Image (cartoon, rainbow, N blue to C red; front, top):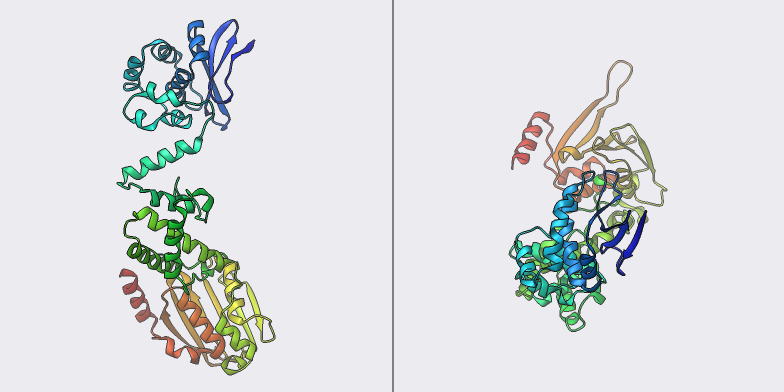
Amino acid sequence: MRDIVFTRESGWIPNVIREDGELRLMLGAGADANHAPRTFTFSISEAHLAVIREDLARHLLLWSAALPLCDAAGTRGRLDEDAAVALLDPILLAAPADVDALFRRIRWDRSRLIAHGADIGLLERGQVCAAMRAATEASNGKRAQEYHADRRRAERGAVLGPLDAAILRYTGQYLHGATVPRRMPDAVDPALLPDVIRVVATAEQACAGMRIGRDPRRGNRATDRRDWDRMETTVEAAVRRAHPQLVDDAVRTVGVLMCSEAADRSRNTPVEDDEDAAAHRADSGGSARKTVLSFTDDKGVERKWLRDSPRTAAAEFWEFVGDRSAADNEVFTIEDEEMGEGIQLHFYADSIARITTLREGDGSSDPEYRVEYSLVDGISRYRNLVSAFVRGGCAALEEHGPWMSDAAEFERARRRRDAR
């Protein structure tokens, strides 16, 4: 039989229960092997209950000291009740100076006290009783998270000024940098918001006109890492020049904000090459001779592009790549059967081959091909090569060389590049 004898408004602060006629403190902490919360209890006396009822600070201090014992029990172990009971008198009944001395010797959960309003400065100086004079029953978990974020930064030697902190709050990255940055003006002290906006405006001016392209090699929503790095470097350099007082964390979060927004714009834009689209709409120049193109991947899947398609050949090819590219599917081909030529993209090797039919096969002989190789530096160059081919075929690729017909020579060149 279990009855609740005393509880506070916050459901997480330990309750006092009566179980089989015995007073016990009951607290939830940790989880079992199935991730369900664990509950622990240990015996207390009427004198301990009286302090718990009347003194919120002592109640919270006891909770803070008991939590490490619960953590030590793990997912299935038993609470060390003797150790828990040994905390009762020194925390609930001793003089404040003795309580402070105890907390300098034992493990305790600092974040719980901070979440319930403890004075952080006094806690850091070991004056736990004095720190708890401002304690509240209501918990503010964000306050504890911010404390730990500041501690992590301090360990790296990063100390935030008011503007640095405001910028991190504006981007939503004050607690940790793993979140996607976004603009949150309401999270910033209104007095500092104009200064934050000026820093962001500097970043926007620095990357005006820059874009982060798509990288279909990694899926339809992936973006070009080189474009990201280029924009991030540009923004950070401009912000550092204009606002030299900012710490690296603040500068970096503005750079990530600009890149993240540019990447989102790219992901929400149809895969299309504007220059190629203009040529397609005009239906003139070298692209006019392309009537049918065949796209294939390393798994034998094929997709056709026809001249009367509403989209450009390059756009449809890159969409095909985005749909099909995978760790075990990194070779894609564009073939113009009518012209007897094609290109093969080797994403795993950052290279490309252009293939020209020199002689058609007949019943007595196999066809003869000329195969030439070139190294490729990034998705932007791949895009240029694909656009050039769909407009003008293999001949249009000549200026995009050098091209090597000797496979062994090409392999040596690739290894030299990779070694660098």
